[in-house]
Image (cartoon, rainbow, N blue to C red):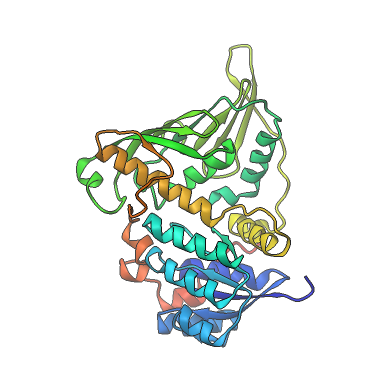
Length: 360
């Protein structure tokens, strides 16, 4: 593309400022407008990023601006309205961050609105987008390690929607499969009966569309991520580039190998950068998103199903869930934002705090 994609950032708190930095740095994008409800922060981030087109919310922004891309970095409660407004404004692509809303029907509506209008609907800053995670998945799918025999998830409890979306997104990527059935056990009872996921510990069994049965551990074992294995290899994602074991030593222990990963184009931006690059590729070339709105919905649905299986005396639930009114809220800072949950960003922090390492 000869001309730059124009970008509107909707929600410019801590994470939104990271997005703005990336989009201002990439050679083929330009931030032209920012929407931020906090008037003091709105003025400060405008100064920081050199943006004069500043608005209170998405509706106000789209009355005046026609960006190519709408980058929504809002707390969960406010994502749906911004996505619908963006789609109706005719943007080419919309991205959101995690967790995506709370009610399944709301996410369904966002996905349907974008699909109806031919708009790319991207997810955001998930470790599924790590370049090395994507490359390890390609090796798995190419058969480099043989047929996948099993998978497991470790450390899923505590925030099964707000944080656990990371695990489910990587599990589905590595296995190349969807979750078709959930049976779960939850504790403590008071957490299970709340509307949000704070403190909810879930142990479960997921049935996958490729026939695998995947155990889910609420607490960390030796790891706190996702393991996938073949007859002689194990690929382990534990919050970072996957570790790979292939073959066995004389004592029968797995042997760790150091297969080199392809260097990142923008290592300073880590997986936020790779997620954004895949979004741009999808908009321009029809490439596959590293994280999509569908991926975020599937993570939410697994969490909702696990909670309701546990509430129903460990009843097996088939996915997709028939009742789309079911919901699971994330913790307050994810649902309402830091300003409303005691995690306020000061004006000085918004102006001066470093966003990324100077070099990587």
